[in-house]
Image (cartoon, rainbow over all chains, first blue to last red; front, side):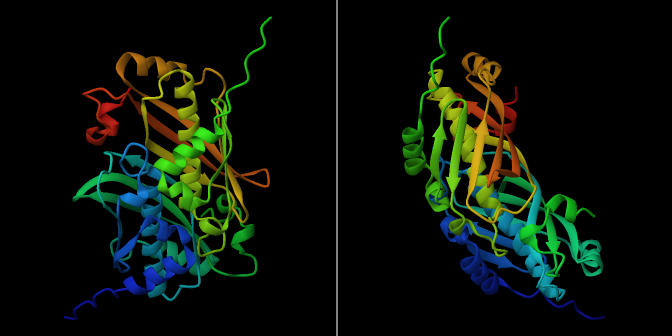
Length: 172
Length: 172
């Protein structure tokens, strides 16, 4: 019986990618605590993310949650040798359950094979849509839940993201 | 026949509030272009808000849109002498229609009286829920639409935001 390989630790690579390509990640004070195709955990301090009420601003929670979903998909695509694909959020919805009054974690998990159908579509059609769910945790308690649909787009001549209508062109 | 008073221009006050109480607003490079109880428009440059694809990061668009809704409600509450109320986002949903490849505007509008029912509830029960819709515009084109439900909470002993369950306690 073979033992499954441990998922590759991509923390350093993902942190470098956030630092180089997402200026807002630095503003959030975000640290990549875990990054593999099975789970991405991003840790954020409270101070840079405060709102007027002294709790975490919804925009910060959303941004961290979106980056956790983006990061998970990036890890999955890299593992499947599809790292050239763009990953852009197409629609999303959030529920804020309790205010976040301390440092928080944005976490996105997926079981093995969760995106197999989407990745097969991506290989066949150069674009696909996949869904993720992220949670914001504070002291182990779920404080907000984020569902997002991401468009995956391979760099082909007909698939330039800057000109893509995300809803029409990626509908699957 | 009386001429209705022009809505008060609250740009400077809202800008000062964002600067003091929302650290992320500075990171977005956000400028308050218009602020009244009828419309808030927030202008953002592209550079601090880039994603890996070279367009605007969804978290930046969401944050700017959420602040436009928050700002509009703050203007309305101030006009109605309810400025002590906290305004926190309770749930939201977004559709990203086309990628944003240039500086953008987050805009939230409401007709006169749009929040009358919610404000009456706020006065009666010290809490209420109200809905807003914001748009992200780029060169005059709507690129994303954000719907949000905000909880309004007056500062009463039983209504401390840090301990409030946003869904249970503000359900109206």
